[in-house]
Length: 245
Image (tube, rainbow, N blue to C red):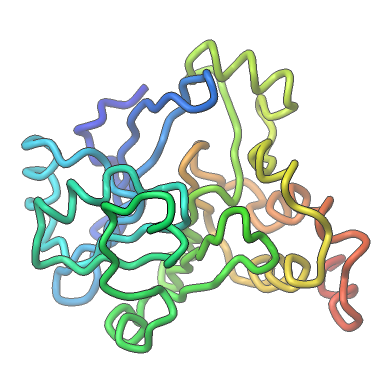
């Protein structure tokens, strides 16, 4: 388990990440916060970690926290405290998160034109057909990095024994899959097929998700394989060839 106060370099001078342990559904998993430095030194903080003095000092050393990003309606727990610590930062996320956590005060949605103009280095891509998550993923074209929360999940030897055991039962140990609850609550539909086709077509170098190590080996192919269950029987005409390339 990485020290939660250590910001590991993902892309030099541009992307950093930190991990922390969280308990969810009776297992302890690693949860990642990803930080992107935008033009002018502004920081974009995806799924923020607890804003301890040490964590905030590490952030402040990288730049000015300008954006606090709630990627879906589940990754919100540390948002209110982070926003209080950085009152000038703008909080971006789905409106559905406020029903789950009324303490989250959103400044704007991820499709707001003002947000999109201000963060032009990142392309915001809604994950269609998965209302259970209501997630938006983000593509950093300059580094080929797709940044997400619950798009994919995996366990490995570095994980806590509770998640290693559960992951073996769920077929997620050493394998890139969708989270079990996402799999159970998602059915094949054209919106998912279109979203996965869009993501897969990106020039991906890596996929950074909340609950797995960075995915750098065949990222587009592993993404498509993990979501195949939701694509197979619902591929719209015109997408079949793209999905099978």
